[in-house]
Image (tube, rainbow, N blue to C red):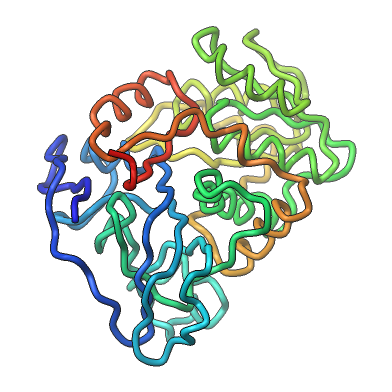
Length: 332
């Protein structure tokens, strides 16, 4: 089979490679990949800005159909449409694992960073990580269940927004738009801010009945601010816009050191919230939101392309020209 792999350390070293067909071991399943979303983390891995373990196939946002099971796995999974949590393994015994926070396990290994991931025709996954795709959800949009689970981990554990809160989300990429939808579900009055170059992404925001702007927000007293831009400018805009005693949520990955007015956290007595990856509880909550129609994933899918288009896809996403591109390895 073919896959998109990070083949070496540092910037670049991304190539289309051939790999032997994988076979599931004990406790594992073989998944035929129908959708694999390209995440900002994948771009950071390609740029050498996020720790990875090359050579490995990239990609961690995945949906597909189970085609085989290993020993100890219920064969009833075969033929089922599923999405998957991203951990290949955790230690299972450290305090974080025992607290139900495997995302913080020091021994955590993940698909697409430590072991072969989803940018391929097939992938091996632990059966314990599988979740059934809600009825009616498109197979390509289903890959966005993973970023939604990350948003839920950051914004629902516990709730970052209360009814009536004025909420600013900076950065209208996929994570920002998902965060805005979750904030609205929690009862927030949500504004999504972007740059003039984000016109197409902000159009998606408005299609979801959310308010969007390209104007500088300034010190406007928001109760909750969410940075989904992963940029110094976005973080600064959030810290300036939040009211004293408000809440700052860092959702975006920066990929390197930044300069921001951190004294505002102290001067305004801000509560700082974050969330890394996701937990099984966050996944259950994410899929419940989708199943009830409270969060929509389909409008975020801007293109579905074959694996061979990866170079153009990475370039377009770096330039902010697409919302969410999904690879479908079945397309030639």
